[in-house]
Image: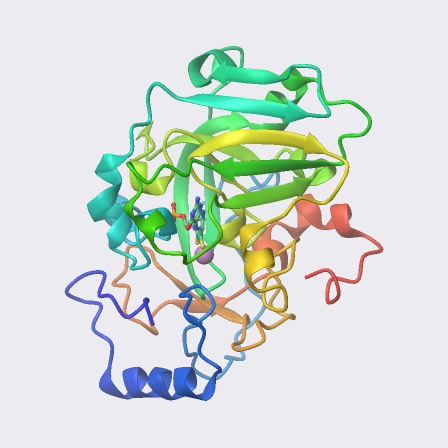
Length: 319
Ligand SMILES: Nc1nc2c(c(=O)[nH]1)N[C@H]1C(S)=C(S)[C@@H](COP(=O)(O)O)O[C@H]1N2
Ligand SMILES: [Mo]
């Protein structure tokens, strides 16, 4: 159970909650991995009225209380730097985010290794505030800075056989001590269907809170797909590939019954070992384990912008 790390002095897990979670864990066939063992225990579902979100009509911002910079940069999942929530903040100074290049391959015109700054130069830098919902049951609200993934893809000129886009994280044991553990099959990989990648909400982040991305948040370039569980938002990207086949994604490969390729946030499809109906909002108001538990929304609240991508798909089957 990795989520028992205190966030602040206020974030004290009540003893009963701790014991309840231990029981839940013991009841499960406990795998070695955190992401799959970290579902947070939940109080009974509340019967509160339909939620309003604060998300703007275009989905690009929200008026919700933002997560503090401190929480967003000290409570991280970045297994290349260790499995504990506080490992990335402690270890990620080893990552060298410049110079950085991205290798582009597959079904597109602009194949080859491109310096990151050259890749980004023609693109408009935007500020967006997004919710990020981890499959473990917590969420944050983070002001990002970055470039539209769709805009970047257009500069790479994919062909008609490019049905998917695949991403890979750096896997350098010199910079990433977590690679010594076979926690996942490195390098970390993720992918999107091309229409998902072209949706205006998909962002390639280069910064947050008005500054460059801290290493632990995926410097110098990470994906943000706000309507999907956080693990789709792959960090420290060094490879982009356009392909006809559905790409391998690390969590799907590791535990296909638990993590599908699509991984859209969906309160109606529980994780096999815990409910996805509510989430613990890590924001400015205390962060105690069961405080600020709010309903999880379909597509993380971005249904108006993205539900159309999945019309006709059975989202229980394609979870
Ligand atoms: N390369 C890489 N990317 C990753 C992860 C990881 O372990 N390695 N963890 C994912 C998970 S599970 C989540 S919830 C988010 C967390 O992003 P944050 O630390 O910036 O909040 O990053 C995702 N991207
Ligand atoms: Mo996550």
